[in-house]
Length: 154
View 1 (cartoon, helix red, strand yellow):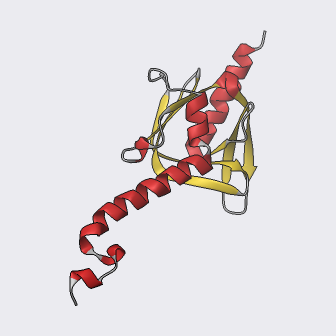
View 2 (cartoon, one colour; view 1 turned 90 degrees about the horizontal axis):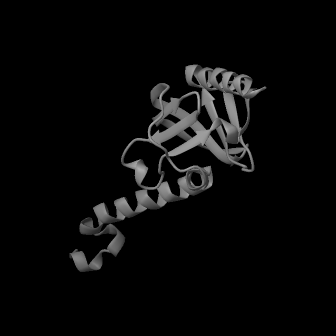
View 3 (cartoon, helix red, strand yellow; view 1 turned 90 degrees about the vertical axis):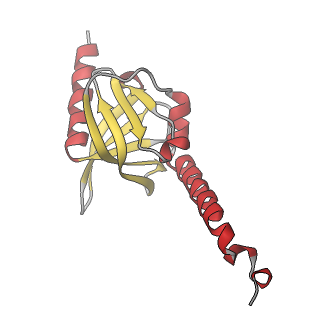
């Protein structure tokens, strides 16, 4: 069988370009569905903040509680006295720019438990997007937020 008889999708010379286009399309869809692009647009990055930095962190993000996008072990999150700086490793950074979520924009941090895990859920003022964090990162966010809110009270 000659190459002309194969459909274009099965032609080996198109495999790599089709794979790259498919991966970029999926990354764009996930960035949109998770609300990442919405938060990045509203809260642009600042100079890197001082605080506790978590490499290879995981988080769930989404605009509705029953459909959260899981960013597993691909995030760099810094928790500081002024807020949370969220970044993602390359090559995903192309469609998910860094953002800085100041504590003043956080509506609250609440613990949410399920049969399998416990997470700290960060709710943002005026946004349906939530950020759910587990383990030591979640506890650090909750404690730092509580300290920032206590310091802001007169």
